Image 1 (cartoon, rainbow, N blue to C red):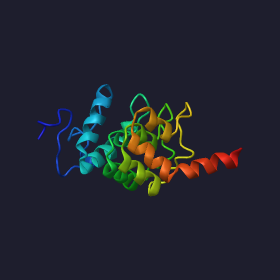
Image 2: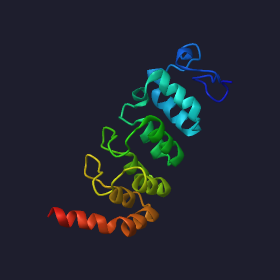
Image 3: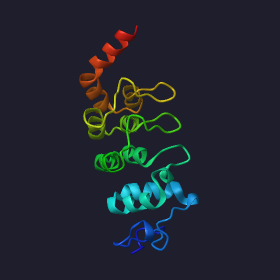
Length: 169
C-alpha cells in the first residue's frame, strides 16, 4: 500500500476516527512535500480523509499557499473544482502571503482552461484580483510569456478591464 506514498498508507475504510491509526496525521516537517505529492496524485477520497483528519488549514505551506493554491498552480481544474465544491473555498478571496489567488496562480503558470473556469464559473474577477505588488492575471501571464493566456484575457476580459479603469478615474 505504501510504495507510492512514503508518508501515508491508504485504507479504504478510513474515517476521522481512524486518522491516527491509518497514519493520516500530517507531519509539519514534511508539509510542503506532502502537499505537492498529494495534489499531484489528485486522489480525492484520500485528500478528503486527510483534510477531515487534519483540517483544511493544515495544508497551508509556509508561504501561505493552501491546497487550492497548490492545485491551481499545477493547473488541475478538476481538483480546484472539487475543493471549491467539497469544502466551500472561495477562489477569489483565498490568498497566500504574496496575495496570489487561484486565478493569479493559473495565469502565472499558463493554465488557460483553469483560468477560464475560474472566471466563468468559479467567482474570480480579473479586474480586481491582484498580488500584493498589484500584479494582475494579465500582467503575470505576460511576464511569464504565456501568450495564449494573454490573448484570451485581452479578447475576453480586456474591454471589461478598460471599462473598470475608465469608471474609476
